[in-house]
Length: 217
Image (cartoon, rainbow, N blue to C red):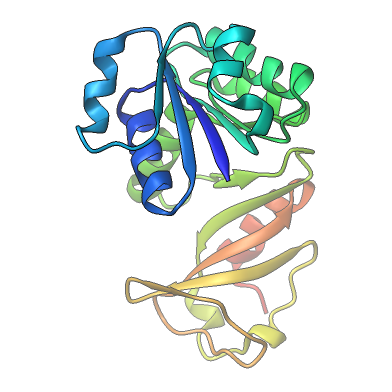
């Protein structure tokens, strides 16, 4: 896979290095040539100094043969513009944009652009550790109909099989147990301290939280 990364900060450089290590080809674009120093002397990908939403620059980066684009500059406006150019002008389906403003992120998710709302994601993870009762969302699908949530399982479920847990509009897709994650089957028995990862319809999140707080049967 050929991937075009716009932005060579800590996120962009890490992505580039990991993609190269996984056997993919990468082109990295950044306005500042000094930013490429983060990639190290042995980086085998392509580096291009220029504006990430400039069509000539993107073509030099090989966007015509790219399967994915990651817009990870420090500016929401730039990342949004890059994402739109990649999707609308070059027909790239796999486009991810880092968006700091969570409201903007939600809008672009609905338009089919996968986003990482950095501030919201980080703050929610911290809040969940400090205030376990806070309702947080790990992931939202582009249509905003289905989400992934992480929730502590109540003691009332200990000893029950996954198949015996009835949750309307929700399903346990994974469990975190003793620091490791597992994919349960119907016969997996809930243990004390288990944390569940639920795939749930957005309209059912509040119902799920209520059931878990009450101790679902």
